[in-house]
Picture 1: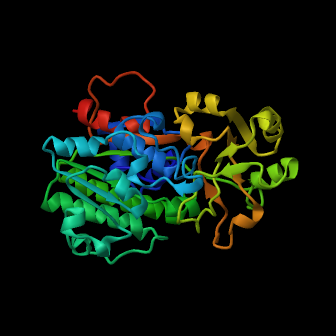
Picture 2: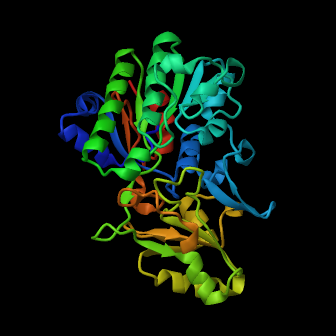
Picture 3: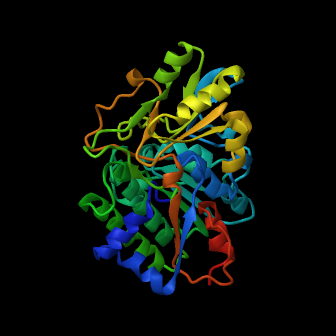
Length: 384
């Protein structure tokens, strides 16, 4: 399973508070690895890497949002036509395994379920699930919960409740659960709400363990505060600056964090791509790199080599913010009125470390740089 936005400290703090006994028990009987996730550290690239076992350079999904050069438009990358690799889930199902996929948000369902002959549904659209379209009916009865708000901890809790019930009743061979990071965007590790969320996850994982399942847990990315010492957002409005330097309409900033659910982060993340004329490339790189809050500026070739990204879906420059900062486009395009807590977000190198843990000891564990998309390899090939 992929716990969205699960900075390792969320688990550590809940364990220290005595609220996550199942996670605590893994230290003596399971496998506990700190892994790296895909950069940009966003939801879609990492979930797709986990279920394909390969980086974005192979599967093609390098953000939630990108500039489609062929269409000449900014588009959501949630359509299966953008996926360039088969999923492990679909391939297992094609070879006779009973496979189930449950996601929190519906934006991932069509990508994760591409080519899958099995159960696949989201918490967000749980009241619209049908046997014909999703391989199962009445998931509200299955989970014993009403349809949750998309901006709630219950959206993720529904995933776990339905997953446990499905394991009890149908016992699929392989099940993939993916949550939402609404709680992590609003609450730091160790806070009451964050600990309560981890405790909820812990209870459900303990039930899956008791049912005899091999349980492997990772995350799509970490999460950090993006504020100054007074709790004010640290934002570099990059499109405004580029317009001042080179004129409006001559450059384009794309924020891959952008999706339909922006209330909790205002479409602000720590990774951006920039499209601009070749003769301005190096001048822009030098200027952007000098800005407070910017940690790294790379050309397309440099970024695609370092982060294993598909060149045709990346801008001329890649901009990565420092740990406490985010990148915006223009000040007027970001609505921060929905932020009722200091801004927390992700996207950069500082959100790359994630947990990779299992409830079985490892056998002949290779010594290598583990990544979150090694989760299926760990589960199927290296656990007792």
